[in-house]
Image 1 (cartoon, rainbow, N blue to C red):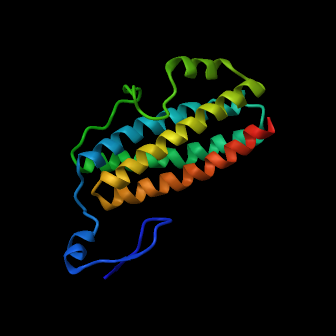
Image 2: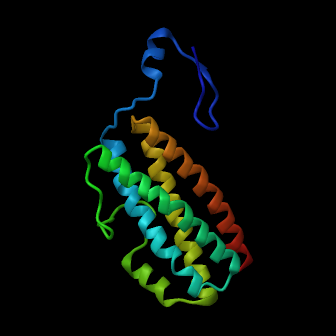
Length: 177
């Protein structure tokens, strides 16, 4: 049996014994559940940052990026919430603790962003959101390696691809400041 590789990886031939276990599982494990709970918290902070842009950012390009982040991550939060409920798992509170979660801004950084405007806001937003996206990619990579549920793997792959592309756009915007 030929098994396609993950994005960027080559396909490989599986032995009969490997083929039996190669089918992605419809059953979630603890890593899948933890990823979904943590990614909700992670996405909520990105939304908290993105909703500041229309009234504080100078760059129209940055305002457009923030709008796309809001438009993509809002529905993802709903999807993750529904999935957790279907699994009988806890959905985190809006401002749940996130210490140690990759890429999350500190309360002080969030206050600085809220207080900023114009080019200062643009610089802070881009710096914080690039770090935030790198954190999401780290989280997605972990669940791709340790998770078991096919739908979670697909979501994690999508998040990795989307946020990698957005990082490139944000780096270009940073260079233009």
